[in-house]
Image 1 (cartoon, rainbow, N blue to C red):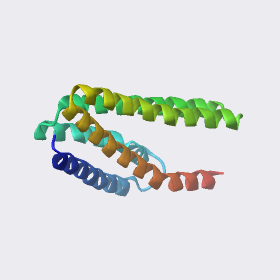
Image 2: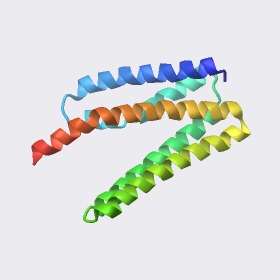
Image 3: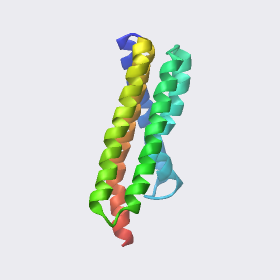
Length: 158
């Protein structure tokens, strides 16, 4: 995959995800409920949207598969770590340690997975890397937008 095509794929994915996010945000309306859950997991919506993009433009499906599996694995580990940290909420050091270790470990998991596929097939490695960068961009942006909304909602319920 040429760098110009990879860049175009990244931009297209971000634009599509932003449009979907705005539409879902308009539908959500409240700080809780189904709409907010869809927005919270918008990165997974983008992952689903990326599949037809890969198929239509002929990008390496190995790259999609590796990127998708790595992303889904790290998201599953994140949910597990958040539950473990919440269960250990009586000990702040343990809770922070669980979350910090999870962040570092998940980053390494994704990076080494992309690196491994890239050693075998450069195009697939590039496709997986671009996909994960797009997914991370959406995930990070959504979290930065939702965090103040969710915190305000929690404070109002107290």
